[in-house]
Image 1 (cartoon, protein in one colour):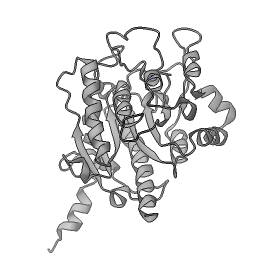
Image 2 (image 1 turned 90 degrees about the horizontal axis):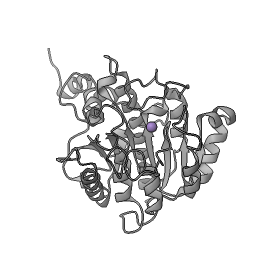
Image 3 (image 1 turned 60 degrees about the vertical axis):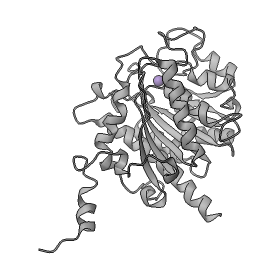
Image 4 (image 1 turned 180 degrees about the horizontal axis):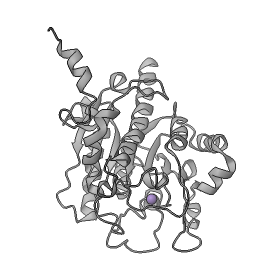
Length: 333
Ligand SMILES: [Mn+2]
């Protein structure tokens, strides 16, 4: 019987168990100038020593299942893989994985090249320390962007814990990146929002430092009280036209929704996927510079890899947002 290669490929390439597992089955590229959207793995664990150090396994876990997520984005109405050149740039080489400080600098070097070539990165970590390495490279004075970025930070935690000189050995760590990005001048806190903070903190006053830095914060309590529409309005008003970076710690989701995560907050209810994607999709039309999904812990995931699938779904939202902006920028010449 006759068959044609194109149809054959269409049938098999979204099967997670078939073929070479690049991120979202995107073509692998080494030159970032081949990409409008650069998918990047950041297998880094030494910025957060409070848990098992398995967060460096996150990129591989998403590679393993994300072919199945190479789909039409039903919320934004876009086939991102056709609307923009989406490429897998592989993993950031981190040959000194136990040396957090050196690894953060290597992450910064890598992303400086990516954004200088004109690509917008969507990354899978790795612990949350990677966000410091990424954003200090791409935003702020002397960066390719040349100005401060706005930050939309989804997390159960503030990550502005900078009262200690180091966090279990890490200086630019998963615990303080949201602070030093402001004090270094990479992020404009007055344009930025932290959202999703919940649970029992180690001490009272745990939110104070974020407000001191100038962030607005939408705790889970405030989200439940005000509702999605009001919260989205607050974020959009605050971000305005400022180039926006989005970082997503999977622990803002409920522990039952994303169980394979490093610092679970099981003592209070977190988001469903629909609740967070409603907020993410409301960023359509904003100048989204890039995004990351962090704190995936594949060794704690369920056998069906549901947390890795959720991580891929959030990445798909980020890719679709950037692809949507890419199409509109091209239309406007
Ligand atoms: Mn967190």
